[in-house]
Length: 265
Image (cartoon, rainbow, N blue to C red):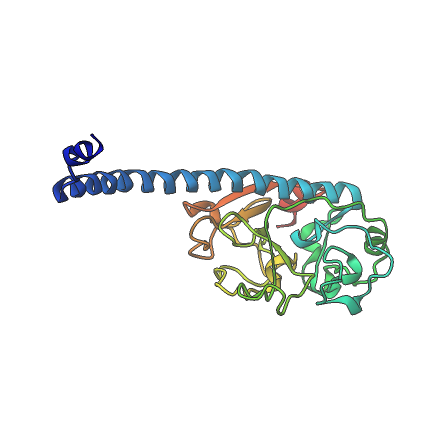
């Protein structure tokens, strides 16, 4: 009986196999683009939420301490006993402790003063010795932001522990590129449009708040903005990122800046 059952079975023909493979390939050509499109939409939705979260965190710091601080400072915790600058670059160092930061690489913006008066040498840094800045560090109440994705300056993707400078914790968007801060004078920091490369060797200037010293660019935002360069990782030009189709941004104002800025020109 068992032999008869085996004898009556028919093998799959090559034609049938090819038909099945063709059907699978057809379904894949439909499903994969839809999946990629949905994934892109999800990333865009996440970026829209995160630019707002970063902006609100910066506003919170401004209300609490009187300064705008770089994005990579927002997730700092208060100084902890025993951590000193000697721990820089070591696994035991606290990445989010002010004692373990390169303070002369971080500019701040005083929200009680007009923005036009804080350009160039007049702009304060975390190491400036200014009494209010030092009081902010001593009484820090963070973290004000708990980012989902962080990459470190100088990080080698093949060796995460190599050349890590722990004060450069870049908060990155869903495409792996750092969020940037735009002021009414243009982008803050020194890097205006260079996409992030595979080895993540980007300028730390993108994370500080150093402002341009020239005249205000008429094409810039009228307020501060947190900007993601979107899927392509680049604005494509030096103008207002709002004109670039895949860039995402959230505008915000703090202190006297929104009230007095336009009176200075």
